[in-house]
Image (cartoon, rainbow, N blue to C red):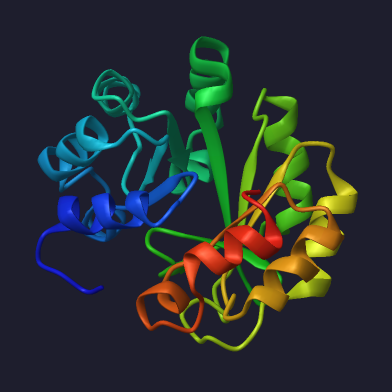
Length: 213
């Protein structure tokens, strides 16, 4: 389902039964500012299901624009590391609409489109964000993302058991069995990308067998 029309693809996933749409502005993640705002607005206005968006969101004005456009949840990554005060302010104003994405490589958090490694440990970072009011996290093992191998089950389990907030798993998911295993580990949801587009996972089957997360 690769296409030059993101809105059409979004509608197709909605028709296939997706309970939520996860959108990443890859250009925004690279340049540090939302780049595809018009397309994201078109997607959000066309969807009947909730939409969450990440990639290059580093200012309060951007968060406001996205939420006004109909996006339900805004995902913060780099800015959560570099400007915790903004995260605290955003959580105070928008509460459940804020998600922090923890992108890990080699046991450390990476930022700026995964290009810059920090000294932060994922669990310690998650706990510090929880203290600022963050109520939900996305955990991605960068080394697994897009590989269609398997998720980093041990790291995900450690994250789930270490913090009290819901954790959404991402990276390396390539089968319905992976989804079932993740649910057993206690994740609140899972993000599937390449496995859907390549046909390894059938969305309707996944929802029927593993639930909507």
